[in-house]
Length: 355
Image 1 (cartoon, rainbow, N blue to C red):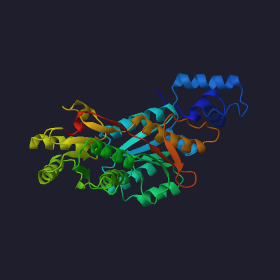
Image 2 (image 1 turned 45 degrees about the horizontal axis):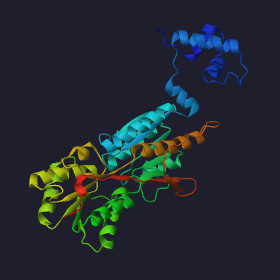
Image 3 (image 1 turned 90 degrees about the vertical axis):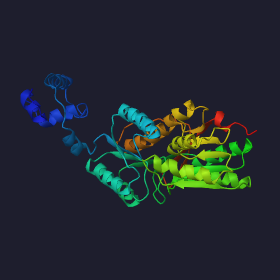
């Protein structure tokens, strides 16, 4: 079948290319084109299966209706779930998503940001690694809306959606303290990212307030699980006084449970456990693991709504997106928003009261 252009349609119907363009871009009424001609063009377009050239349309309108979504690891259960929710709402509003993973690699992230610019995406949603501040600022200076979620970059002012990392870990550590545990270890990944720093600070504040000793293990994150399990085993072997452990991330928690198994440590008989980021593994483990959960639907909803509102402002006459997310919101600077969404905690057998 022949691929028709606007010129082909105009020639076939013996009308001008401009008239065809106005009709295809929903400007017929504005240009006082007769309903009969509009119907004639629309019927012909349907018959020949005409589809507009997306590149030409982008050059004409300045929009691609594509959003760039950059996360740490798209295979991670948290990021995968958030991405799916974002994609659904974006699609409902006429946008497609380009996914990519940064792997917390600064060079890779810079290349991906350059790709977003080359693809002329309408806006970006990013869980940013450290070291790409200049590139993000350049995007913002160019007028592209950029939304941070999960964490932010110090010194970059833009819309942000995060959870209450500090308060979550403060509350979870206090739960262990209230249950009678006094030697509580905190196992985390060595990171200067804001969300990880907030979690560590919450734990530290709780143990300091209770006048307890701080036990912290910071592991370099690696996809090789042995490089996570072995440092945990060494830490637990060294600190035999520990009666509870708090894992700051899902990868630390799942690999930590493997370390327990290899050391023949029982939960909660030898060590009570709380983990950050609830998942099926923690629910199904025997005994089940107490875990902090992130409200994924609210995080995704707030994130995509912030971007849609920015994009609507660039499109005169478009209605603003409505958000159903329950959260607190405050200005970061000027019109930019910082949305903080509270987490919850599912209390299970692993944190039961010490006897």
